[in-house]
Image (tube, rainbow, N blue to C red; front, side, top):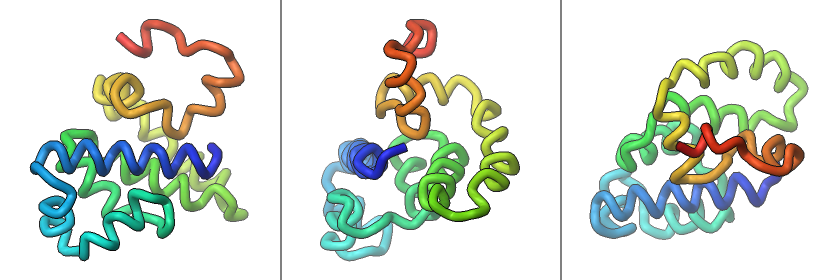
Length: 128
């Protein structure tokens, strides 16, 4: 996954959570962080910690467990242990159930975006 994909996905997740609670300022208050920090995460100027990604996902009505795993994998992708980490936790992603399809349809292709672009088209059944 490319860096801009992570930034765009985090931006969309934050925007969705902010819509759920009313404003980005309210979301920042709920998270216990300054609004400037939330904007740094949203803009990709500072990495959003994996645990915060999970909390934001929960507020947005998305599967927090899946997002925690995704964020952990995003930030570990350049680490020498990435393949082992993927083997250890990546298999948990399919167990998140139907919410995975909703994730792809509403937020973006996320971690699997590069594969989808290489294949050309995402099969229709994934988006339904």
